[in-house]
Image (cartoon, rainbow, N blue to C red; front, side):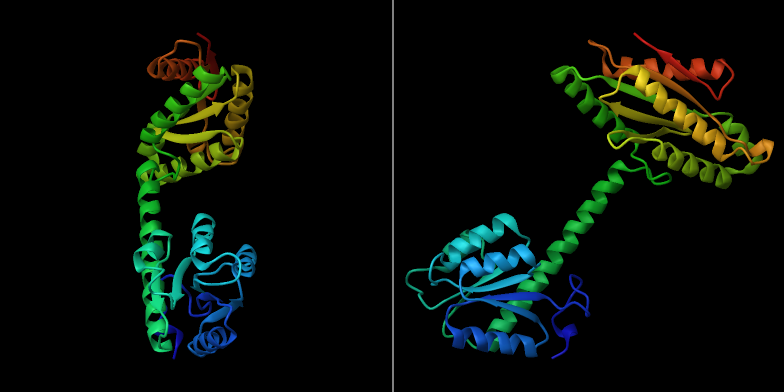
Length: 312
């Protein structure tokens, strides 16, 4: 049997799914291991739950196939432990049909349930189904994560977008009101960007936006976050930062942009004007942003390629 018979999008043909067999009956355990290895799977084994949990600490396992009745922790209790800690699917095997129902196993987190005696071909079919559903689940989760990222990201610069800026700024203002830690904001505008666009075209203008975004990010600290506010304007939220420290970040950003374009022809030189402000008790979100905006326009009116600050 080839890997392609049971592999979907969740696995590469070079990395077959990792299966862990947990059973204290060596005859059953060895027969399952041999059959699945011939089928092309990577198979580990354990004789009890403690051994199985130790293996899971050290190695990524896609599917655990376990008996219920074992010395020490039983298979259902082990299932609960695994589901709480690992991204691993579980097939439960039992011969005690009167004591352990399918419904109970599923409630404990099992993904499938097989009664003894069983044919190895049946177990393989169940394993294929679990792997297929696992691959579909992972693909769905990846798509949802991508959609979430698209919803908060500017498509051109790959910075966060303005909608996410407002959401995050509200969170930071709430944190300020709870803990009193300083909070500052930069509003950054590319100088004469419309004139650049008119001379060089929108494609070159887009390159400038992307490059400026990259330079802004390069000047940020780990706790800062950058956003494309709109057009050629960017914002940076600086948590745990007073206005004086924010000015240092702004100055580093201004100098980095200027230096990056220093060797360009005069018509292609790019600079930025930056407004800096610090949040004050009682500010609304709108007031906070407007103050940064006024500071940015002060920087422009002072000759551009400048930094200006406004305190409340």
